[in-house]
Image (cartoon, rainbow, N blue to C red; front, side, top):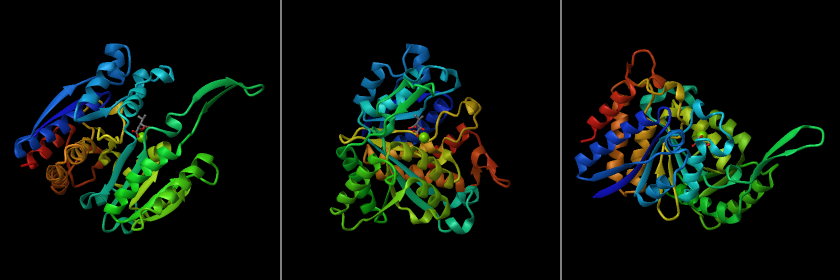
Length: 358
Ligand code: IPM
Ligand code: MG
């Protein structure tokens, strides 16, 4: 089959990690007889430098027309002094909004081979870990009203509004309940309902939804407790559903349990089937161009693309198994390296993964 992929390499380590995911996709194409046509478009800092804006219209148009979007990362020191509304990150938020990508899936899987890279005591993760964070991605405090105002005696003040509608909570809730139904049947909704009105609405809607899913066991946790439980007893979790900002924070925490933030892929999906795939980590400017970045989160994001956007489950599994094979052979990128393993760089990681896809 033929597929078109809009490719945004972005900033920092973005270009080098995306190149490795493309190697894996090309290996899949050769092995299974598919063809992937890549269209390169700019977003973030690279777009600011070349086009004067973080999210050029052409980028949005190409991404909308493509079968899926592959993205590296955006942002870096170079653009840190720009005003909030012009920063590279606005490209990411703009794309999520323009494409309607309200459901962000972030699976945190501790591969057996990486048990030695997990910072938790072995007995807490014995038998592996497999949880997924379902993060609402186009609402909440990321998109609420924000601004500055003067106070009478405390100087300038800044505000960002956390706001969720019933409809927004219901549609992300459905994604999470469906997911839990297909997995272990356990869903944890995370909020701060002891303080926030928006969280009380979130909790009410999730509780109402639960009536339609008798096979899914719903529980609620306050976000502070959830953060604590994730390191105390991560095996209690199957599917976690939460808002935009809590999901941002908890998914970084969950990823570390899998050994490194460099292992956490993500898929951002819309109601109409549009999908954008990117690692959950950022652009890590200090590693840019050094061939030291771990491209596995991006490669695993490409696997999610094969599964969720193209319906190619077998091919997706082939990519995931290739990553596992690389780890089983003892290869480690610098973020995962421990004594006795074989240190490899970014590009070699892509080559080894591609070689395993046959
Ligand atoms: C993520 C990132 C982004 C976010 C940043 C770069 C805007 O941290 O995808 O988790 O906060 O959503
Ligand atoms: Mg984040």
